[in-house]
Length: 249
Image (cartoon, rainbow, N blue to C red; front, side, top):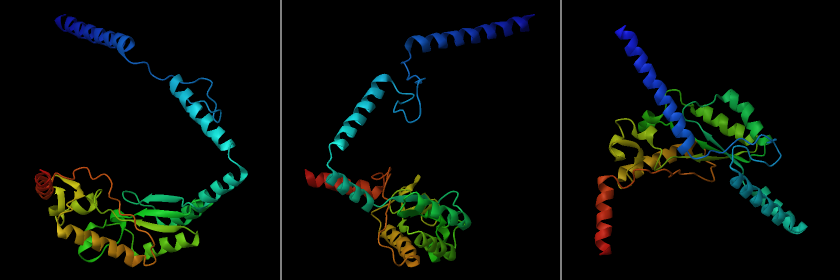
């Protein structure tokens, strides 16, 4: 009997907590955007948006349309020429689950049909580094022959290839192991390389050299350099910044 009473009490507390939560949500939570029942794809009406935001978007769309309508035929032609001259790149991030060559044989022609003019290939650990850099390549990385095939497929489909070599942030695949751990900006974080160490520059240069070696006709190189979250946390950075602050005094 005592057990039954205790269970009933616990159930009552739970029920009260649920009711209180529902009442609190109704009374104090901010109103959320409601679904637009009359939404029809292509109608221009935006689902899941508050009325004021929807009206702002429609207003901006109308303003953009009116500006476009005010263009002369010559201006439209010039705008069309500029857009046609712009590169339309597809970013291939190959880390994690890189596609097989057989899949890329079908994918590259699709990119071309969709209007792409080039590929931004972020190899990361899927590139076949060699020598002292071999350790940063994944065990299932592409072979040199695979890379040559991919570049050939891109050329067949009129797709320019720009290699993306991470040089500052996103360096986990290089700095996660013990060999290059000492080059981290923050020893607890493998994402950023220490820019003050000569060895860091040497490492990045070797990575670039090996990629360019397999693509000698490369015109452009993307160096990444984004999301350098912990820059300034290293000892060398701290010393340099303190010196700069001292010189400003």
